[in-house]
Image (cartoon, rainbow, N blue to C red; front, side, top):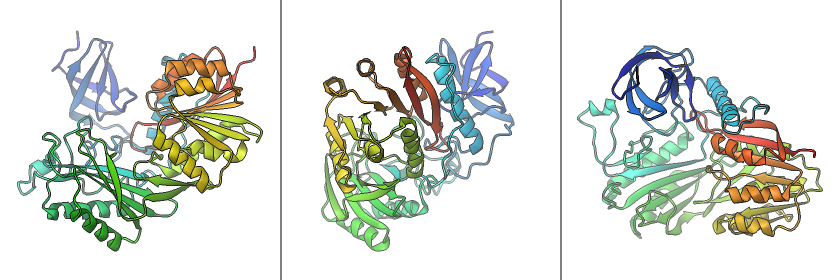
Length: 464
């Protein structure tokens, strides 16, 4: 019998796919079931049918998996922030390792790689150092809120329903950020309501208030507040800055970004400091990093320390090596390796990231790092000195094929590949199979209660 849209089936979920959905096979076809995990016995309805797979949702729960726990967040199951809260954390770690290993085997055809157990996050709640909340002129209601006529369906500020740009919860409390972040969120909510200025309409693209971004320094327990609006307002914005700085001594800076673009991104077309400092300082290892409102910095500071410690371990530096770091960003990896290498060269195409990297070197008095600005496809061939160690930390989409070819032309003795996407990691490793051996892989969890996983891969040149 063929699987068709609208059909219902009683099934027991047998696996979990990368992306976090439960997996069951019906008449040989893979069916992905949202919010389900292995061991769940459920009645499902097929909602989407493709040539090689189908998608379904749970209609009735018959028996829960023993791996399930009660999620502490009231938005669990509706919010896109952390979709695995209902799954025991130790089991999350197991599945994350499994996703890395399966990607290497099925996509990269790498079957002999030693994939270590996932390094856990030291905190599974309150771990995020950056949160972005969207404003809306029409909030999305949970099923419980729909039953309460007194609930205002207008303004909301919060997180999105997964897979949508226009469905925003009025998030009262997010467990992924420290408690003070939730107090700041509520104070900004109340100020917006009393301001008389309209929230931004995600459909109409009209209105004033757009985003609230909160950044937290784990090392120094300080906060930066970034308020993003569609226009300038010289009377209202200084008032909220003064309010937050006076109320919370831990808030050391309030920033204003302004953008009239329709795109739902917090980076403004212009930026000013409303009060206090324009940067926040956090620390990884022995080094401090200045973070501006729109700088990239790993969102789990404690987890990032474990991730970069693994990079340093796999690089096996003695102090005499030249290290080349592709996609060097704001210079985090080069600076953390600087005390164990002779020279570190970073290649990066974003001018703001290179400026941040150079500033962080000055801040830490690091003198053996330099950064080359430009498209890596153009700057990498210009590297005349073959590095002993190459670090690759690409964006989620992975490496450009031209960059992979240029890496093979350099043939460094060792490479360390840092990945936030097991699928593109496995794809890129195919390019290196002839010349390099995958010696070991270390998954590191920076994102508890999500399916996302970072991996560090040690590659050693094969002996010819």
